[in-house]
Image: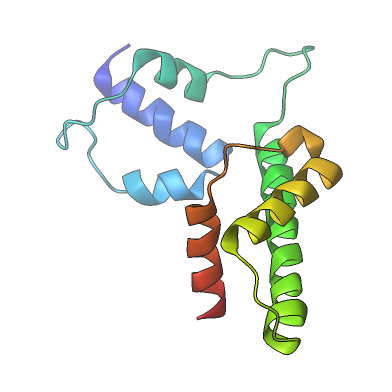
Length: 131
């Protein structure tokens, strides 16, 4: 496949997928002039079109539901902080808040539970939320 055809295919697929984040990075850009490099397997996976009659995993919907699950868990922690820490004046450790977050995820969304999430990441999100 020629480079020009490849660039056109990538941009068309981004439009079809409504991948506005990616489109924002490449729109109006000459990818060849910018010497954009990509993994062949990533390119194939991105531009692959679904085969008629086969069931396709809808990544966009699953990604949205995962984000919603994490947002709900984060909101759960924010509500806890507002009522128990800010209003009631209790003191809690970040590790305790993180454990509560993990417990919520494991009980409410076991498919999205990630025991590898870090206290530091949650702390950064909380600072951004409350400051």
